[in-house]
Length: 195
Length: 195
Image 1 (tube, rainbow over the protein chains, first blue to last red):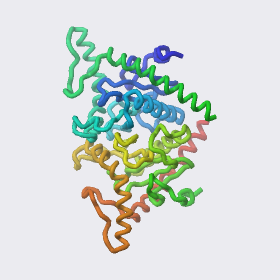
Image 2 (image 1 turned 135 degrees about the horizontal axis):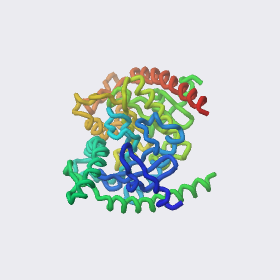
Image 3 (image 1 turned 30 degrees about the horizontal axis):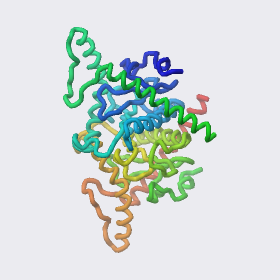
Image 4 (image 1 turned 120 degrees about the vertical axis):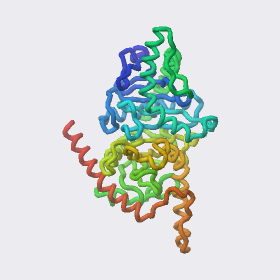
């Protein structure tokens, strides 16, 4: 099944429709590109069923989620030439979660990639910050689209990171959709030969 | 099988023997209490096979790891009265990993639990910091034990957090070993009824 047909149905992340940001989907899980990535390649992996806590996931959903996180980490490291990545879940509001729909951040990391912005610690600050943003950005996008309909630009609350255009995100999603399928095929081949 | 017999064999976290810090073990995964928890209940979940990257894990190891992370999150939230937790993996050195053995931080979170220390962002800074510490602390502990043999105190490099005594860690590990088994039984019951 080509990626276009597998991501045809509207996909919701919490209350937001994110279909055109989705670059990979299984029967239980989806991956989406971010409106405001903290670093190039910063994506989210979510269960299709919208539940707030990791403990709400059934075994097959949990396994599929992290199997997809593992797959996405391989693809992101490969295509962004990154030797490492950060993987993080804010499980509940007191942990910084804003959208009450389980989501796992996967962020490719290179040596000194955060140096200009104050070092690796800064990523975590921004991650804590972007959690509020994940919801806020999607809302801003909707507002922006409404305003753009009136010839205005999207509101930009945080100056450091520009919200990306839908076109840019769709382009990245299409590219990642192709790239992740290479790793799916490799994994299927490896599993086939190891069984 | 009682927890005492299931954690009898020496367990290694990277180059360190952490057997007495371990409070839960499956055939593929173990959970250990921290020498210097960032917040009460901060633990690590690791595959028994020492590999550096998430992508090195076989499907059964990956599934067991995150099934255990899910379980541990339930236990920690319950016993620490925390509504949330942070779950984080530094996958590779450029992401802040110091011990080249996959480890997932699970940190119970309460509202305003980091306020005295500068807010939620501070946890992430400390998490980035503690990554170096996870290895350094275990080394310090060995040095400390060697020095203690000569009647000296363990070296304490970072002033903010005191390394805990082995006795304190063993006490916490024994307590968590009992508590997590309650959630194992509940999960087995739930799975049994849903099958």
